[in-house]
Length: 194
Image (cartoon, rainbow, N blue to C red):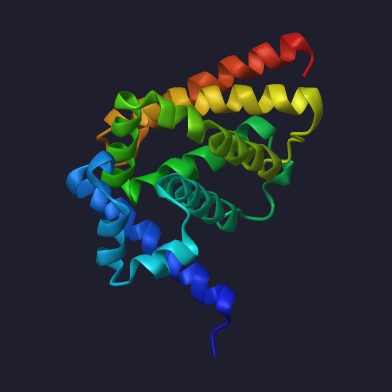
């Protein structure tokens, strides 16, 4: 018998998946909570018991992506430089984004028209980047950690813009952009003594 938590987790995943599919079909701004409930074949009350609002769905999408990245980490990469581990982790993230490419791009396009929504989502993105740093073995606490998280967030957003237009099957343009940004960040970090 499934526990209540696993049922809630399964329903949340179903909601997130439906939201991404609807965003791909009609755009994030034209996707309502009612549409998502109908796509999941649940009542509005059931949706409300799991999700607070559309911002909560965005947060859940971010957490789903984080979980997939972290779940895919392999042992034995601890000997690699942090920069290389970050590269691998972030490329894994972009490959996971590719699984929901149309929906993610629809949400990002919506942010261009509604910058307030992007600002509301920034803390979630920074939290994700904090997890990516920690997963790479780089401490993300204190003032230095906050600077690193901010820097990685900028790198991610810059590379995300390339990913949105990258139509190559191997994400080669995204890889090149990420590699270039991480190299620049590494040089700055070395200069500042990080």
